[in-house]
Length: 83
Ligand SMILES: [Zn+2]
Image (tube, rainbow, N blue to C red; front, side):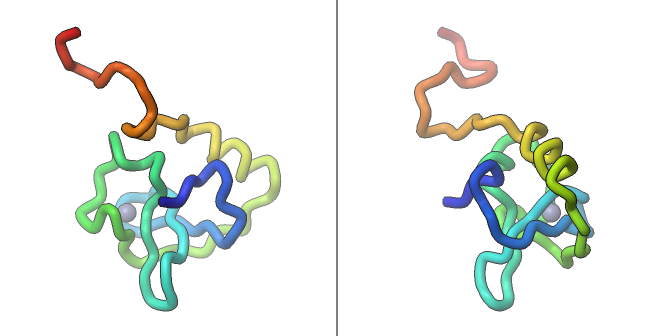
């Protein structure tokens, strides 16, 4: 499990869905945990071809802020469930 909020490696953008992705292995790029919900990518949880982005610190922080921690393992009410 990899969080965009703590990941310190190279972050690129998936050319298919225009959302961030990280290098999961030598040959595979994947999307982050925070993208489990609300992402539309035909390759999810993997990513398609990626585009190199020259992030500066501010743009990276902005990017991370767009992906709040909504991991299902944390106790929270699921959207749409009758509680
Ligand atoms: Zn994608």
